Length: 180
Length: 198
Image 1: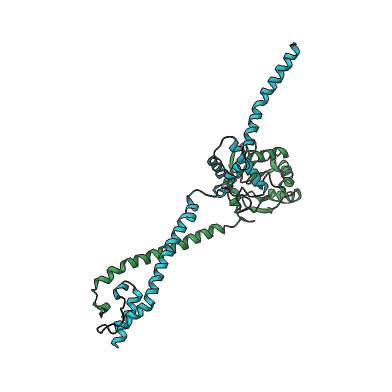
Image 2: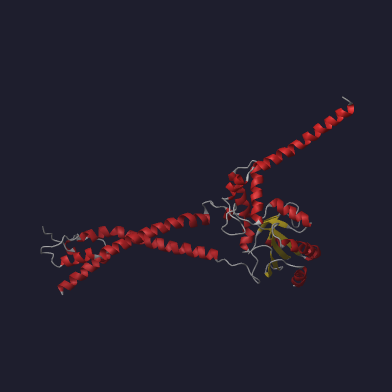
């Protein structure tokens, strides 16, 4: 082996060693698939087009964001790290599932619960109102007029409605009319 | 079988009050719920209808953390109030914005010509990726102050509709011009000297 050949061999070896880190980095980037990127991107929203998830948004801004996700995943950051970064950099508004504090807590959690409770209360009130003005109540009112006589139908018990102000008023009015 | 139906008058006097109590509680809850709902809706409505600052209004203050090497007056952070006494050209841009590429050289030119007369051109990168912002600034060789819009706080405060968008603010902090779309040299040369003379 000539000295010249030996020198060339060492140079080639040194060149390969120098290129090794960049080859390794390039492999890291390429190992992150579009699916992996979109798995994170679907939990982010496009900053430019409202209400468009990042994984399906066609704008250049979103393409840039997806590339940033790829770079961060390739650098070893976790999905949560990436989401935290975007929230810090661009605000909680870009998160599909914003943290539950402040305005988002009220709008997304307190308000729906209040609405359900309110709806439930209104429903109960409506049912009571229907019972008070329904046929059963009419029968109860009629049978009051023959309270001492035999009842031909099995009437509902008046005290079932006790506590219902509208029914109490109604009964009181019927009694007044009877006295007259 | 017959049944005698007792009339309400046959009931003990204390009983109705006892049985009515849950109903009253429900009514109170109902009203509390309705009023809370109205308050929340009103609050949401007020927030959603926050209007963008217009010409003649005081420019809302904000904080910026400049990109490395793109600070102002030797600072790495500042707020708009720090710039009081200067005419401020507040420009929202992004590296992905095509129209911005036309105006950036004009803003740089204005900065070069007016900086020593008391003008601050401040670029705010909106919804941009930092490496791309830095590459863009390097590509155009800009030297005026630039900062990212962290948390998109500034763009939300100014209710921008897109990029590019520019607010020109006088020495007293009052907005004197709003430009939706790209600015140009003629426009800047018409507005800035007038504000400097005030």
